[in-house]
Image (cartoon, rainbow, N blue to C red; front, top):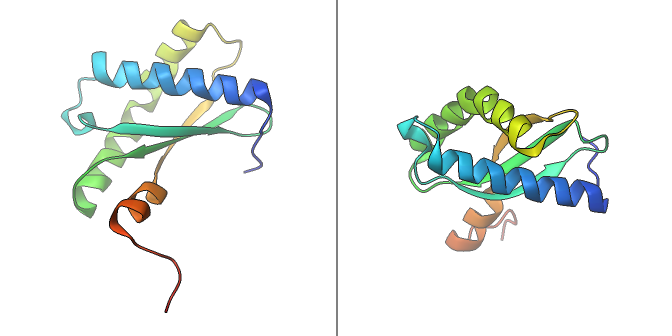
Length: 113
């Protein structure tokens, strides 16, 4: 995916992250989505796709369950974002586990010694 670093894309990503986090805390009913932390949003070049990075504590099985919950809630989140942000086109939401933070916390490295 070709990403955008324009001010508009950054501003839109910030708004999407803020509103999505609020929706997850206040309105999401799925128990799998509790204690999910959003760490960033990356927009593609034409602002049609938003990749939302998240972290959650727990093992691999719990992460997969959270990923499924986020994918299931993406339609709900997208429709509510559309209402809250009043966008002409609401981007498709894709959720990605943020491995960078886990690497920093647990000292994992992609380098082999």
